[in-house]
Image (cartoon, rainbow, N blue to C red; front, top):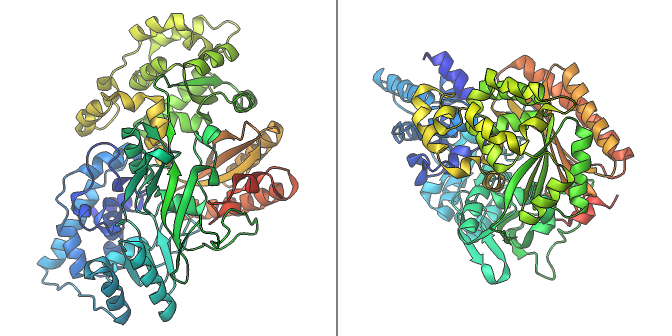
Length: 615
């Protein structure tokens, strides 16, 4: 692969930070274990290749060290292909070759000289954990959002405890250096950028359980996946966000919502207490009488209250007989009505209304297969929307009485492992012969036809692995031999397949809180998003809705998709985003119950009632 092609791969990095967590049991990049600056992870190396190849940063001694620390183990290829379809190992090799060519020509790497501020930072954290070297700074300067300008910081620091954070903040105040706090950098909307200092929290990995009080306390470097993994070991789960998102940062920025918010709630519903360092360097926790009031919600917005250094989130037990099922629908109105009814009746622990884009992308190991499966689900079977439910035996019986047509866990596992055989399998034309007045998916979900489907569909880890590049077939075969990879409960808790939503292009998500008792309004908003995306020639699609608070409200997402390396696509997306913002604000101002997630920016610790019901 030539350097231009390598650059194209490098520039397509989604910055999801999935390479920072061991979500496939491959381990993580060995070079990043001892020094977890972004530059030492595959994500950072992708950025560094772009930086040196385009002459945006010099070759420094630190860069040479970063490059030499990579042993080309290939873990990044497995992780990134699972999420985005990219093969970053070619970039890792290209970066090594570039630096070696630079050295072979007799060039001397530059050496960064510390200034007084950096020396002061290193005095607080240790020399190893603060840097002003361009090779460390560059991966903290950009993200794929078309509205985010390139913002190179002057310093990056990795504190290890609250005391160090306090000292760093006081130093910044004295020297008038602006700072931003970074979780895993996966906000992809520019909130983790700074022209001064970036505080990377990835050294603070403490997790401590308080089981007698049903909570777990996590430090700001702990991801949702890592928290969930430790909770499940003890027989609990937490309401967690995207797997690579750091729990403290997620709570701080917008609160946590997931399909489990159907029963566990959002915002302040999810935590017991939290500790902060404020902008003066003082520590406080939310159980103090004189603590700032973070329970209120200001729809005009507020600045961050400081750095969240620990949050105690609630632990939830889960029944052993819990399973997932999917109720298919041919229209949005039917799907939303059913989900709202589940909310009112308190049925199910997790509920989400998915569109065809999410459903097909989430379960497919490649982009090409996802496109084929979307056509199969939507065109052949007539499944336009799907209500995913995680429920115990009793609730599943009720659901099957409410809606006779369900995709069971057994059927979904059959379909996932048989994806490569579904589209184009002429034997499945038998479904069309039995349709009559019914939807095709009703035939598929008929329990009596399951044994026949098992005979007709080549469903196995080996079959699914045929859809991926040949050199990854063995890895995918072993991966999908693990039962959790097709288990709806596990996948709903750990959310590793939702990271695939940006495989085709980078998603720009619009999240709103909506009134579930006004389905016509939700459908109108959805149509407006689609209209805006279409007229600006931006790929777009409905994302999901999860009912909240006994079906009275819901959290809704619609996505625009953009290629951050295509200037025309970026311009179109920016224009679409501007029009979408105007549309959102008009609904927020004129329709009861509609709130934009902007209303909770830096207010993720507020009471859910203050957001959902107070104007």
